[in-house]
Amino acid sequence: MTTNEKDQQLNYKTLIEKTTENGDLVILGQKGTCKTTLMQHLARQLRTDSKNRVIIFETFPKWVHEFDSIPYMTIADNDVQPKENLPYLEEDKSIIQWSKDFQIVNGEIVNEFLKQNKDVIFLIECEDMEKISAFMTFVIYQIYRKQYLRAKAGNLGTVNEHFWFMVEEAHNLLDSTVIAKKTFNKLRKIQNEFRNLKMHMVCVALRLQDLSPKIRSKMSILLSRVSLDDYQLKVRNLLRNSKYRDEITQLPKGKFIFPELDLELTTEPFMQQGKPYEIMSKIAEPKKLNLLQKIISLFVVDAKTGKRIENSQITLEQQSKEDSEDDGIFSEGDEWFPEEM
Image 1 (cartoon, rainbow, N blue to C red):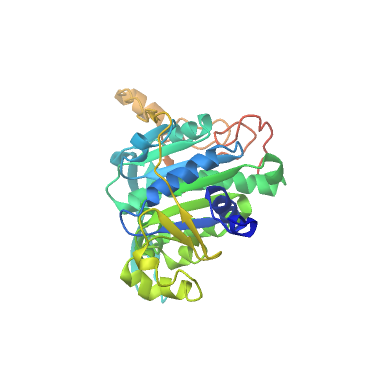
Image 2: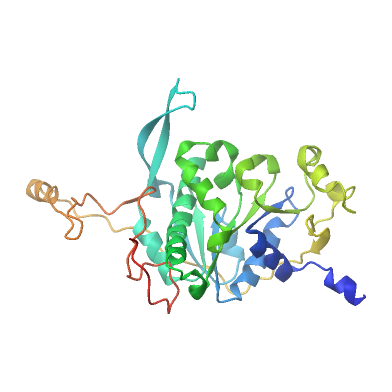
């Protein structure tokens, strides 16, 4: 093999470097094409760099059994609860619709979990796609606020941390019908700023059509064997000048094509190193209050804000704490953090 041919090879490291430049990556292919195996290799490669923090979302218990030694937390269905129905007008102002907001019941524990661990897995057992998307948005938003404030203070380059969100079954987070809802406008805005804030997303999807076009249009694509409808509607045009144009619907298992460089990547079986271990996410049952205690609790106020404290639940709309205290998103040694003006 010539030196020029070696330079043109695609491997995990060069794929990560290319994704870092562009921001996000979606791995597209049918079942049985080793998409998850490839993403596990990418996650392992990312974890070798102390500057990278890897956050993995999955809805089927595969990573928690087959990945390397890493802490994971199980998010139960009742950990994500509807908060209220919010009315809003359609664009033509002729129809009033209702959208959901959600609260993360164990949000404080989730933040503490992020604080204590560099890399983590969230096994989300919610049955409703909106709940799954709401939880992922909650976690992503916590990171976004910290990175934004670092950038505002000119501290983003000094800290130099990259956050990587690895998303299995990406349609649960980025489905076009879910993302279109008003509640998730925030996620679209955050994703637009990912690259500038050193945040990246690597997704696995069966069909390109399942993902919101407002998000997938800003992502690089790695192709395995694709479905015929994706090929006809999108992929054929992506590969119109590629030498792999006629092979993409018949690629063997474990082979991927990166259209931006027109290069092929072959993944090998993933050999587990260690075993994931669970961090419990349950909150202790609150003590029952008598009538007098309940009345007193109605008048308890926060000494700093002067606002009445209702409970310890964190909603999707709450901003993360924006002061100089260690709040769970910073790495060890990140001693200074600006207050938001």
